[in-house]
Length: 221
Image 1 (spheres, rainbow, N blue to C red):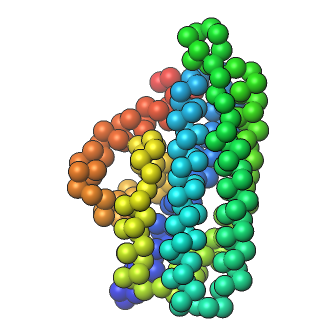
Image 2 (cartoon, rainbow, N blue to C red; image 1 turned 90 degrees about the vertical axis):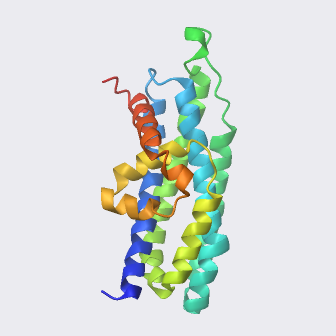
């Protein structure tokens, strides 16, 4: 396998895993909000993770990845413009999700969502989940082949910029979702460039993610 082919494969693996984390996270929020046993704090943490990471993901595509692809393949401009318009639509859905007031009930120390908050959160979560699914179904057939048009060095620089600018909002959940989305080898290849201080925390982050995901899924085991 050539160096170019290896880089192409890594770009596609990392993009596929990132997209799958978005599918998993947005689907889980819809499911979790329907379970009265899931505490308000856990729902809020997942909601905030989704909003921060989806915004960051599509903003880095628009600002950094699209120009790389355009420089190598100017014929993709129209398709990339359409994807950026879909990012704008997703932003509006994220604004709605972020604005839901997660009011607690009077009982149980306010740990549960009120009925109105639960209804509003579920409607907003469904809109984001569906927007993400529709967008990725459109984006992936265009983006994955286009990633083969950029160089290994360009992808590595882009990936490092993404890691360096990733918002620190419930970052342990990203590790948990990545572990579910990919094989151990794929996840390791994606996390290899993490700063050493963060890499040393991976076991603790994985443990915290596993515990929080069990709560969100209503699994008390």
